[in-house]
Amino acid sequence: MLTGVASRGLPQWSRQRSPGLAALAVLLVLGGALATTVLVMRADERRSVIRVTGRVGAGQPFGSGVLQEARIADDGVSYWSWSQRDQVAVTVATVTVLPGTLLTRPMVAGGDGGAAAGRAVRLGLALKPGQVPYDLQRGERVQLIHVPGRRNGSEGPALVVEEAVVDGVSYTSGSAGQATVLVDSVVAPVVAAHAVSGEIAIAAIRAQP
Image 1 (spheres, rainbow, N blue to C red):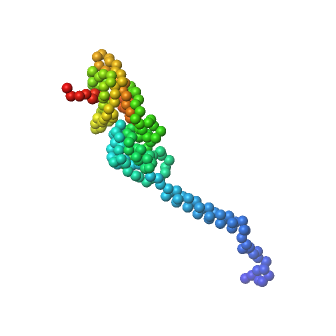
Image 2: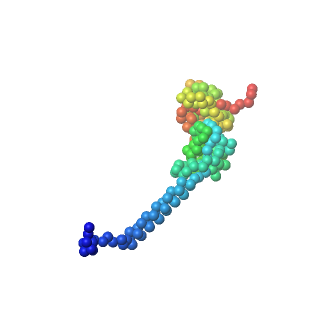
Image 3: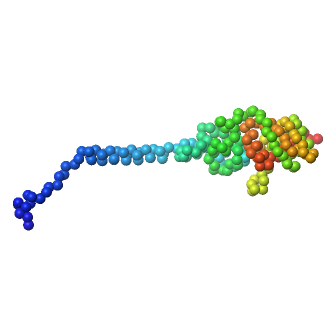
C-alpha cells in the first residue's frame, strides 16, 4: 500500500485536448457528410433516352410507334434524348435494331449532324447478275432492296428505298454491272453499306404491259 508521500510522487495524466485536433475532427465529419450527400445526389441523376420497343431493320424508318422513354443513369454514352423522339421518328436505322435497345447516335441515319433530308445524292452500285434487270435504263424509277446473305441467318429481304432514279448504267457481257442511282441523302449511307457487302438488288418500277 502506497503511503501519502509515495502517492503524491506519481505522474498525473493531463485531460486537456488540443484545439487543433478538435477542429480537424469536426472538418472530417463535415467532409464525410458532404461526400455522402454528393454521391446520393449523383445516384439520383438520371436522363430520359429513347428505347426501341420493336424490331427495325437496317434501312427501315423508325416511326413513332416503336419509340419509348427510358430513364437511365448518365454513363457518358451518346444516346438519343427522349426530347428528340420526333426527329428520330422520321429517320432510318443504319443497322438492325432489336426490341429493348437504347438508341445511340451511330444507329440512326439522317439525325442532327447528318445530311439534310430531301436532297438527292448520286450513289454508285456494283451489281452481280440477278441483282438488277438485264435491260435497266437511265431515267427509270427503281426500288432498292436489301437482300441479306446466308450469314445473316433468318433475316429476309427488306425494302431500303421505295423510289430512286437511275442516273447511269454500265453493261458488262450484256448485263448491267454497275448503276448510278439518285437517292435521298438520309438513306444513302445505309444503301452504301449494303452495297459494299453485295447485298443490294434493284427492282425496276414499270407499268404492267
